[in-house]
Length: 260
Image (cartoon, rainbow, N blue to C red):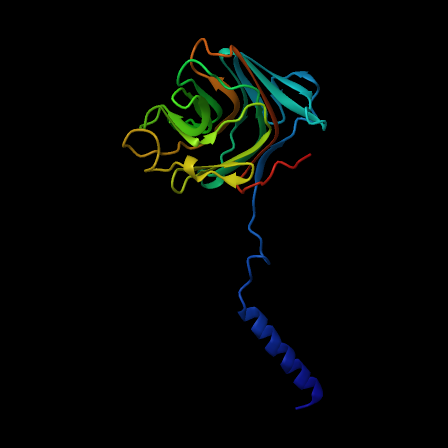
């Protein structure tokens, strides 16, 4: 065999080996889709009723764009009186597989101290195909422990009205936190992360939740609300201020609140 033919044969042999080796995960990254990314910096200061791809829902409440309290850019302030509500509404995420990740920076000025068992919601996901409301971020004032505690909850579905709060997850006022949640439709599972750490005690799923013996089942998500609502009348304090920034919604985990 001539030197030229030997070289050609060697190249063909190497090519055959390369074709036989399956591609690695790092060589072919899986596609992902970020539905929403909002840091409020491009919105004018003052009252706001809509933004890029989102609207608002209020009752005895308001939303305002203000200079960031951390000294960089702008942020959203949500204010309510009594048991009012003030939400940023993200319509139509329609995530693939009905599963999604959300991340935001959050600072709740004060939590309720009355009445007993006062219940509040910060995030609520819903769908037009079923009445079930999924509340991946929320909590309750627990008089027996004299504090507010994070808890995933739900309402209007077959499992009833419940909030699975845990005293191991206290809600701290007047402090910025990076909060994340994952809605995983494979097991109707809600997982919560606070400042990057998974809080496994807050996880709920089809069979493990805080409601009736029925299965907890997600609706087909087409709306997500982020903000504040307290349900009991005559609460103490009588008004609430929540600050929000660096909102992201994706079909993959976005990570820490480091947009600024």
